[in-house]
Length: 488
Image (cartoon, rainbow, N blue to C red):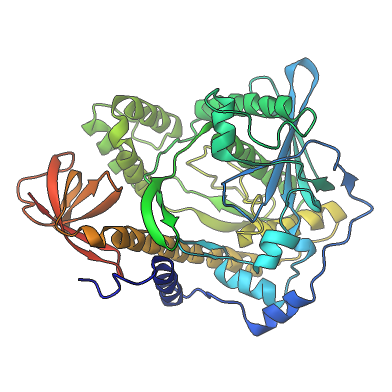
């Protein structure tokens, strides 16, 4: 029996998260110097030069439990069927300045670490969930990406500027999506804001048009099997799947568009940026082979439109195993990177999004690259030179890319440990499973209830990927997040 089977689940997962963060070179806690800076911070003063947009029906749309609110959105009707989408992003740089201890911590970790037991924020919580968060009912400074969309969802024009905004309604993805799709009541808070219901429908329509336009250009649409633990007190009661919905996709489309606008804005003003790049896949030949196994020919040279069409067809033909296909293709595409890009230099672009110019700028409370890009935006707006030289910006890009990999590994490790905690009391139970991997290094099976994956250590002979099997749980290693099964 695992030696921590009776330990408080939250405490166990937080302990594991801290250990793995340190092993990966991340800082779980803020230094005394950072906490001393935090103690004397005050709300950012209002800028007289910023536009006052507090009267617009801004709202935040995020997860139910999100406390670091980075963005607000609002729509407006234009001429001849055009729609304006305004995206307001928290002006974190108004409070977090370069060369401070708080900035140093953020630059070291480069992002928040979201684990089952605890969020290890990139910025102290008093900042990320209060002073620099676009909280309900609070006046906040923001960077606004003002987009004008043609009726078909393509970008007609754009503008970037500073503004004062106010969050009039805090909405959650799931409740809003259910209402938009006609499957749920109007979420609380909408009726109290004049015109917000119509504004949200206008945003929804614009997002659907943008989605179709992105798909036509070859943006890839994946599906994951990510799950999160649901707690009852301090014990894990079950695992719940993170599913896409209409509201999540709307915000995704707005943020993708805003990030592209920012990259082009900085290029146009003669300033560098920290580009988000997903290079043309080097293992395209393997993607071609995977498609061929399913009877779909892909061109010999990388083609995002052809790959997008293949993925759409695969989703419709076999929705149950599409997440497995998605994972395989994502791994073959390779990881994203942050690259310093200077005016006049050719961008490698983002293959998965089928865009050429792209810079993360919509989550400065949670990602350091976004905070860096905001400082570049401000320099452009004020006619100043870049606050970062070529070597420094390149070094920041390398650091952010390396740390992103470390953060992902911590989050995956803690997620697997959460599943092991849930299942350690069910050793000896049998489950229906689907074989997801079969190679010399091992055979892997995924069970559906609860969603989990482990290794078949006995009875794996003569089974292959896609086979349905009955397995029995032999062991659950909470510290490493390993599950061992035998075939029944």
